[in-house]
Amino acid sequence: MENKKRNIVIIGAGISGLATAHLLEKAGYKSTIIESGSNPGGAMQTLIEDDFLVDFGPNSGLETTPVISEIAKDVGLKEEMIYANEESNTRYILRNGKLMALPTSGPAFISSKLFSLSAKLRLMKEPFVGKSDDGYYQSIADFVRRRLGSEFYDYAIDPFVSGVFAGDPEKLSVKSAFPKLYRLEELYGGLVKGMIRGARERKKNAEKSKQNAKMFSFLYGMQTFPEAIAKSLRSKKIYNTSVQKVEKVETGYKLNIKTGEEIKEISADLVISTSPAVATGKIFGGIDAELKRHLDEIYYPPVMVLYLGYNKSDIKRPLDGFGYLIPSKEKRKFLGAIWSSTIFPNRCASDKASFTVFVGGARNQELMKQDANKIVDDAIAEFSEITEVTGKPVYIKHKIWERAIPQYNLGHIEHDRYFEKFESDNAGLFLSGNYRGGISVGDCVKSADLTAKRVIEFIEKK
Ligand SMILES: Cc1cc2nc3c(=O)[nH]c(=O)nc-3n(C[C@H](O)[C@H](O)[C@H](O)COP(=O)(O)OP(=O)(O)OC[C@H]3O[C@@H](n4cnc5c(N)ncnc54)[C@H](O)[C@@H]3O)c2cc1C
Image 1 (cartoon, rainbow, N blue to C red):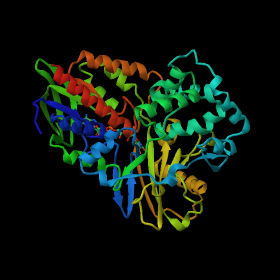
Image 2: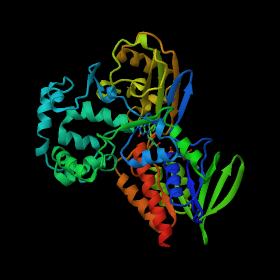
Image 3: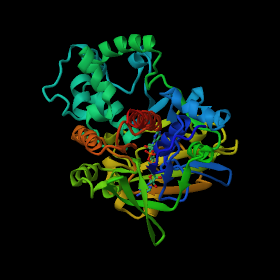
Image 4: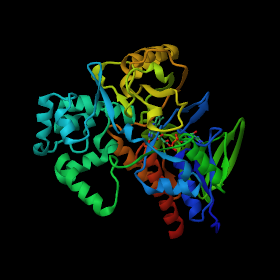
């Protein structure tokens, strides 16, 4: 590999930072990665203990870009990349205390008991619904209620939003959080029309929509991906060290980095930040206070991830799906549960079943103020009733994410615009990470690809 000399610093060794470092190295540019934690992975954290494989962060990703498997191949992990079992295509929604399959085809929708006849008839009006006068300043809740009716919102979109963002649909911006949905209305005048024409266009461009992308993980959990990337990098990685601030100097940029009590200065020609919004605000606040204000406004709700292992013989219902989501209307103490051992192999022993339960989020932040043991006990009690579990869990582990997932709430477009302004005012500084360009693992890899390309273009134009 030719080493083109440039002093590039990447802040953060989550998937965004590591994928960027990998793609830059492929193009001949080494970097220095500075990570405040002791391991690579950031939100991607896996624990293997007592024959159970626990993913505390993402349990899976959607393969929306070929870059994911290209990187997996480059770092020798392609053989361990696994795809979700067919069985997990079915998703359940809780309605009136019962789990009902979310219909995925026209005939299944017509016969489904999840929606009433009037909700089904309302859905048929969608092609005739006009645009809102609110333009891009609309929440996903307003957008869906207007186009598809309130029952569809309550029992499909509300639970789906908590499944993806752990978010509040009344606050999430449809344009920022669900840009493809918003674009269907903008470009084609409606969702049904847009889906038909969009599918034709995707076929032409060989692209994959999120509905058609394959769900993947790795045999030994999601964290093995960032770990393998980090291991294969020739770039320097510095762990247990946080970037405190970045300042402009004549020759480029000066970074203050802190390891334990020791503070050091290092210099850089280019800095790519992939740290979460609040940390990034602190780092660049000295250069631009307005940027800090924008970053500080991005809300990350708290979420508890509760992992439960049971003897299979204690589960009375068939585990024939991905899991279930709980609409707000059902007023339960958790957001939903993933049937982890149904989706992927190697999650636990064959006589056991494992589940990942999510509690809190923007919808239920108050709940997270309680004692952790109470949150766990309440969630297990409700989970057992809904999932028809008779025995007690044989394995329990939880993690509380005080700040889990950035919310692309109303006003996020103004943040995005300011990020662009900041980058054009400060040549050589790049803002990346999951508060920009999408929160999913797939979107983070897409953003990393885009960032690496922008960095290379910037260097080569000079
Ligand atoms: C509970 C949970 C469940 C999720 N489930 C899914 C899922 O099923 N599917 C999916 O696609 N996505 C899921 N996501 C989202 C996805 O995992 C994340 O958006 C993605 O992993 C974020 O990667 P990142 O590299 O942008 O940020 P991070 O992983 O947060 O990495 C940022 C890194 O920066 C470091 N850092 C912070 N401050 C500093 C500093 N001052 N100096 C140096 N380093 C610093 C941090 O320690 C961290 O390692 C989930 C997220 C969570 C929290």
